[in-house]
Length: 137
Image 1 (cartoon, helix red, strand yellow):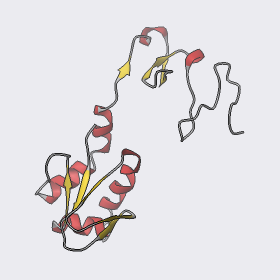
Image 2: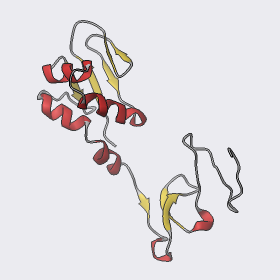
Image 3: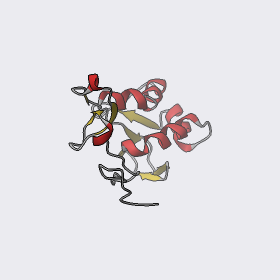
């Protein structure tokens, strides 16, 4: 999975997507908040977009800064490609008419309905193996 960091390349603290980034400092974008950063980078007039366009903010891939603003924007917006590279799928059950789901090991794999785990947004199990509700309504 790609590391995405934004660097405040100015002499003052800036706020990007509700995160303060000190002068000359980096902020590592968590995968769970990536969509918010992408939305901000697509919106002309936001502090993030203005600073990325002018070079006052730079994107970093965990190794080096992008010096061309458009390349930094493209890297930030590559959410799907970055996520896909980090996903490994166990396809040992593929030929059994199964569906993709989260297995007991925590891996995404092909599962039959009896072993499919259904999770809420916090990763908590919603149903047991007999589809009895464990949480919520």
